[in-house]
Length: 454
Image (cartoon, rainbow, N blue to C red; front, side, top):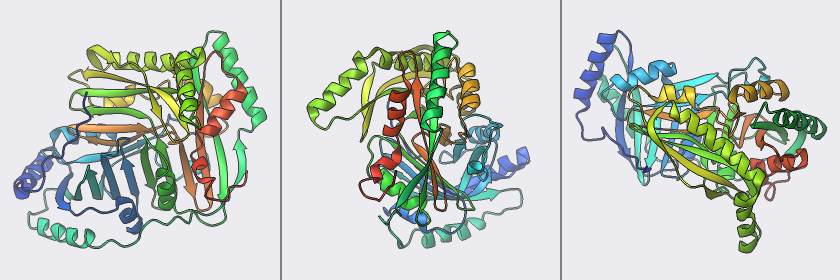
């Protein structure tokens, strides 16, 4: 399956004609609908521009291959996932996209870290800047109903000139000094939790479970999430990058290597990503560690559990056959993983909503059997995962891409809560899994450049 992405319904098409079609559709279903006006613009720094925009929801997303990037400001049109999928099917606009972010699972154990984050985010932004390779476009969303007239297009078109003019600020490297102030759970509690997981595995109740930790930091001054995102992202490779900032300033950042799925029309591609070793200091050391991913029985069991879980989920969504590529190594800045791409052809009645209801949580972030693992995670983890390990990305008519929000953190003022996890299978031990979660801490990339006190 290719990773080809295309922009369609672009500049040069008759906006008035499409406007009339959307208005007619709005009247026929008796519901306001989003209408996208689009214009190609000169290249700019999307993250810096998004940082400049005023108060309101902000959403940034960049794909792992760095080909597709978007920055969005304020929600113009919100919908349930079910309604969003229906609108995408009915709308004549090929450049309409809904931005998506969902919790890991429904949880009764909510804490104040997540009190300003919706359980599910699904919206069309008022303003969105998109980059595909080296092409940049700006989109503006009007909400159309039976009363709006075509003359409104001219007013909205004028807004482009103001928004895509000169750039203002740029990224600052002045990330404030950080001080670690809590492990949740602490090392002693972690050892007990992993022992309980291993007992369940030995008893045959589980094949794999992913347990996570929260590492809390406090900065000497308020953290600017955009500066932090860029500082983290500029030191990472082969990762997605995303940021969401709510109306009141709470933010969520993820620098994640894991794709949940990419859909191109009826074709779907899913990652089976798991098993972790460090990077070597020399090329020879790096190659030795890479071979461990294929030679170590525990790491192979962990990866096979993910492959089996994804294949089972896709079997319910796709026609046969389902193709599993041979595993390869995904090398990141500090660690490396096993990655197998699994692809299939979706059944006629399967769309993004069914996919996102079926796939997550995959065994890469939950476990197998899924329900047993989810129950144990809820019982044993002393915090609410919130958006950590949840699906994040965008849906479109012809293509959608959703990442898994791991290697992430929630930010409020001077506080940063970092979330990391590790897959527990037969052969795991508490000390080794603790070290693995430490290696996944995205803050590690800042330690050399800031005064982090542990």
